[in-house]
Length: 261
Ligand code: GLY
Image 1 (cartoon, rainbow, N blue to C red):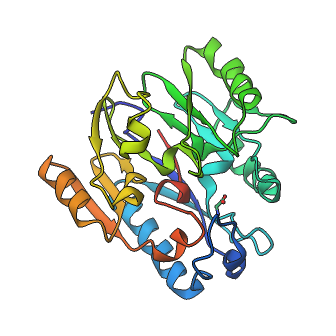
Image 2: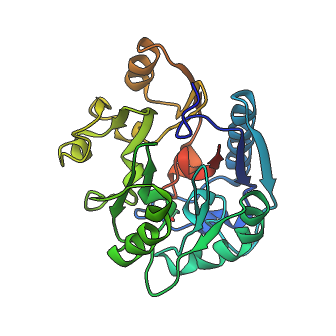
């Protein structure tokens, strides 16, 4: 196993700040409990380390409530990184904050410029291609800039659609194997995964579609027993972590880290 879409050596995370209770959200499910979220975040970092990650843990940022969701700030490919330009205006400064940390790791770093916008949560790298979902946070101009940076380097970018009302493309899907995607039915029905094997999350467990594969480990949100069973039965080593607090501000397992080959 050495595919760069599922084989990683490092991860970047950012410690949560108490201001996370002001995080953006599509529905009001109450504010996250900071102490619980802090404990969950530590468990997430521990799980990454157990899966083989050398974790760069960045300091909390006390005035940027969504900064714990580092995934949206950059796309990390095996040969380069691309700094994003979030569609949520309040999240723009997160990119400035992480820029030096990305540049310490990658020799080649591109940066999306305005007025285009694009967030990492809308991007699924499968090794053979980069799928990018248009959404409220990612527009065609952002995708065109990304393609302009990476296609000359041999990457293929394919534009797809994040389902209406869904925050990010990866809210509804994850890479399980380089040829296998875990997806909600609503996203898979669009046909965007026609060239892949697709595992559909059982009805009622749609929030389980956002998980990460890090080397041989799948890290998923706890509370989705049918999905856990399906993935375990398929032979994966699956770690379940509480995500109740991040979920209140639309955060899932992928949002909390950048994974680096
Ligand atoms: N709270 C995550 C986001 O909306 O960007």
